[in-house]
Structure formats: C-alpha cells, structure tokens
Image 1 (cartoon, one colour):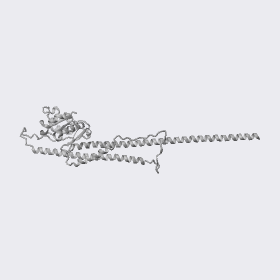
Image 2 (image 1 turned 90 degrees about the vertical axis):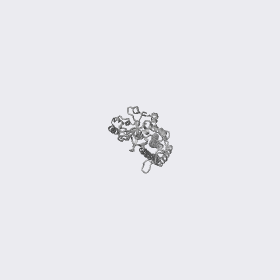
Image 3 (image 1 turned 60 degrees about the horizontal axis):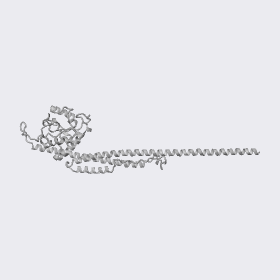
Image 4 (image 1 turned 180 degrees about the vertical axis):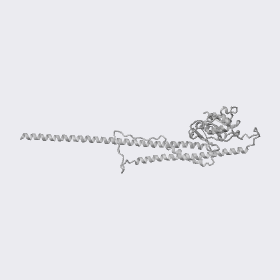
Amino acid sequence: MAAAVVALALVAGAAVGLGLSRSREQARVQAEASASAALAARVLAQDSAARGAEVARAGRAVGDAARDEARDALLAAVEQGVETLDASDGEVADEAVRDALADVLQRAQHALESTPADAAPTDVQPTDDAAPADPAPTRGASGQADGSEQGAAGSSDGASVAALRALAAEVVAAHEAVRTAHDEWLAERKAQREREARATQRPRAPGGGSGGDRCETTYDGPPFYTSPPTKGGDGSNGKLPESMLRATSWGVDPKGTRYWLRTEATQALERLNVAFKAEFGHDLDLDLTYRDFATQVAMREALGSIAAVPGTSKHGTGYALDVPELPCEYGWDTPQRAWLVANGPSYGWVQPSWALRNGSNPEYWHYEYVG
C-alpha cells in the first residue's frame, strides 16, 4: 500500500513539473512573439517616417525649383526693363509710360531682394535609436493621411511663385509699352528730320554736279528695307532665325521694322551708340542691318552687280549695317563719318577697304562688325 502511494506521488509530481515546464515554454514563446511584434512595429514606424521625410524633401525641391524659375524670369525682365528705361530717357512723347515702368521695376527689385536665390530647406533625418514621437500620420474620416499641413505649406509656396510670375508679366508689359513709345518717338523724329531735309533741299543742277544739295540722298534706286528675323531660318546667309539675332534698343525703319543684327554685333553697337550719342547728341541713324535672302535676290535683280550675289552678302550674316545715304550727315567728309572710322574699331565696327573712297566699290554708308 505504501509503495502505491509513493508511486502515485511520483506520478503527480512529474505531471506538475511537466505542466510548469510547458507554462514556462509558452511564456517564453509569447515573450518572443511580443518582442518580434514590437520590433516590427518600430521598423514600420521608422520606414513610414523616412518615407514621409522623403516626400517632404521632394515637395520642397519642386517648390524651390518653381520659385527659382519664377525668380530668374523676373530678374531677366527687370534687366531688360532697366535697359529700355535708360535708353528711352527723354525720348518718349508721354513720360507716364516710363514712370509706370520705373514703378514696377522698383517693386520687382524689392521682390528680388526679399526672395533669396539660394534658400535651402533643412532636412530632418530619423535615427535608428529612437522612433519619432508620432510615426503615423493622422487620418481623417476617409482613412487617408491628413495633408492639411503640407497643403498649407504648398499653398504658401504657390502664392509666392504666382506673385513672382505675375510681377514678371507686369514688368514685361510695362517694358513693351515703353519700347513701343520709344520706337514711335524715334520714327517721328526720323520723319521730322526727313521733312526738314526735304524742305531745305535745292534743285539739282542739270546733269548733277555741285549745284545739287549735299543733304539729298545719293540713292536713286527702288526702296529696300531692313529685314526681320527669318522664321524657320536654318542659320545660313540671309536665313537667320530670331534666336541668332538681337534688335537694337533704338530705331525702326519706315515700315516699323526694328534693326536686327547678330547678338554680339548688336551688343557692341549699343556701346558704340552710347559714345556716338554723347558726341553728337542723338542716336546713330540706321538704314539697313540684317537682310534676308529674298530681299537680297530682289536687290540683285533691281541693281545688278552692285548688289552682292544672294547668299554672299555681309548683311545676310547679320554682321553689317548701313547708315542713311545722306552725304551731309554721314558722307565722306562729315564729322559723323570721321568719328565712326576713328572710333568704330574700338567697338569692333569698321569700314571695309573695298567701301573706302578709293576702294573697289565706295560706300560711305557701309560698316561691318569684325569683333
């Protein structure tokens, strides 16, 4: 009997021990599962935070690019506006258009000064040691992430970009108004000078000679005019597109066409004109600059060999200009020609040897840009 009791006790003890062992194993498994779940949650939170930071950086980069583009456009508009404002000083019929341009340029300059070109956002990088305090974005009733803060920031950036773009458009409009007024003033001035010249002309003596008026043009052929850029031009002689040319800041021909030359030639001529104007009190008068292929063909047909073969004219390259064929203003012995011949080379503009008085085809009105 005693042996049976002992056996039962041993069996009971073994059962209890087995139960305890199983409980400990279950507790260990549960603890490991909880730890794994916690680690997974932490990794997920960090990954979500990293993605959020990347999205924020991308958004800031897009906003910065748009702002920089708008700022650059405004800066370019301001530079052109300042150039036109300076060139039109005292040379518009109504100063109100220049005042309007000056006002918008002042506002634009203030906007540029208050909008730094190199502003850079600060990125916050999550660390492995600590998860963010609020790793998950708040969600609205629809279950979508709440982007109200990002939306507000985006709206602020968008308003700034929109303001810069609107200001640039305002500068361009004011600049165009002044340029138009300046061109009209110059055209009227040129027409007035021509009227005055005609009013003071004396009849030529029969057969020409010294009885003629030195202010009467020496050109008696059909009229030809300067050419605008060639639409769809391939860049060859007489086929130059607008991207290769630049118009002078002053002057239009009788048809209202601006005077176009290759960009570097125009830039040099602008500097030359400043010095010429300081010497003579008015802009350099222009008659012809860039000449397209079709016009050169027409000139060759009308004038014969004195006109260059189409495709070979220096005017077709955008590197030549003609002043008016008025002997009293730009003729051989005038102060204007003497000044141009003496000072033009300093700006890259010369009279080629063939066009000199003793050259193969004398043309006192013709000058070329040689750099």
